[in-house]
Image 1 (spheres, rainbow, N blue to C red):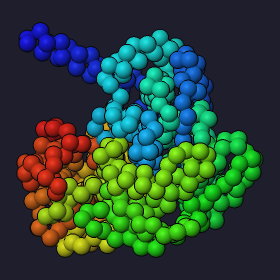
Image 2: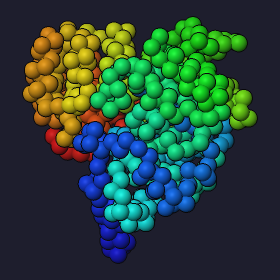
Image 3: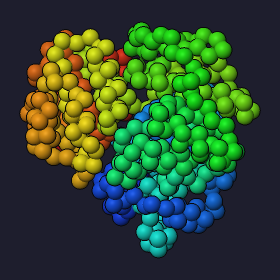
Image 4: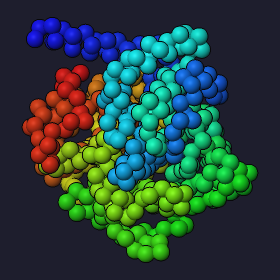
Length: 465
C-alpha cells in the first residue's frame, strides 16, 4: 500500500513537473500576450514533420471566429460523438486543467501521454524554441492520430491564416463571426480581421459563416471565390422564431425547410446565434456524407456540458442569489452578456470584473451597466490589468466599486453584499473564471450547486488563493 501510494505521488509529481516545464519553458500567450504569437507556420510544420505528420491521419473540422468558436466547437463535437463517430476536440485556453484542451469523446488526454509526448519532443523544443500553443497543437494532432479518431473538431487559437492549427486540410471550415478583438495582431479594421480569419478557407472545402457584416461579407465572398468553394451564410439560411428558458435550459425554435425546437443545456441567450452556425455546419456535413440525423443533433445539444466538458458560458452556479460565471472578455462578448443580464430577473446587480491589458478596456467598460455594484479584480497572470488601474478606468465610465487582489476575495465581498433576489456575475476574462475556487463557493453557500451535484469543473484551491 505504501509502495503504491509512493508510485502515485511520484507519477503525479512527474506530470506536474511536465506541465511546469511547458508553462515556463515556452512562450505562452495567456501569460505574456503578443510576444508569444508566432506569425508563421514554420515551427508547427517542423513539429508535425518530426512527429510523422499526424494531422494527415484524421479528418477534421476547422473553426475560427471572434466569439462563439469554443461553444460551436463543443456543440459540433457533441453531435459527432452522439452520431457514433470517435471524435477529437481541440480548444483553448483551459479553465482548470491543461488537459481540457485535448479530448477524445469528451475524455481528457491522459497525463501519461502528456508526459511521454513532452519527453519525445524536448529535442526539437530546444532546437526551434516553439511557443506553448505550437506545442499543444502538435500534441493534440499526435494524440488524435494515436487514438485513430474518425474526425476532430479543431478550434483556432488566434486569427486563422497564421494560426498554428492552420496546417490541417479539413472537411469543413467554419467562421462564427467577426468582431473587435486582438487588433494589435490581427488588424485595426473589421476587414483586416476578417482577412485573417478567412485564412482557414481551403481549396474546394465548403465554408460556413455564422454571421456577416457589410464590411466582412465581401472578404468572405472573395476568399471563397479564390478557393473555388461554396460559401454558406448561416444567418441567411436559418430564421430564429422563438427562444425561452425552461428549467435552466434554453429552448430555441428555428426554421429552414421546416420548423424545429432545440433544447440547449447552454442557457446563454447568445447561444441562439451559435446554434444557427452549428445547424448550418451539420447540414454541410450531411451533404458531405457524414451520417448525422435530427435525433443526434437534439440529443447532443441537450447535454453538451456532460459530453464535452464545456463550462463558463452563462454558467449558473447558485440561484439565491443568482451566481453566474461567463468568460465574455471582449466588446462583442460583453455586449451579448449585458443583453442576457437585462433579460434575467434580479434586483441588484453585482459584477466581479477582471480584464487583461491587451483588450480595448474602454470599449468594454462603455458597454457595462452603470447601475451595478462592481468588484474590480484580476487573474493571477502577467497580462492581467491591475485591479487598481481597472477601478480608475471604470470610474471614467461611471462604474463604481472597490478593488480586490483575487477573484475569490472579490466574490466573497460580493456575497456579503448580495441579497437573495440579487444577481452576481463574474466576467471579463477566461482566466478569471478559471481561478474561482470551489472551496470558496462552498464556504459561502454550501457544498451543492443548483442541481444538487458537485461543481466538478471547479478546483479545491484555498479560498483566498
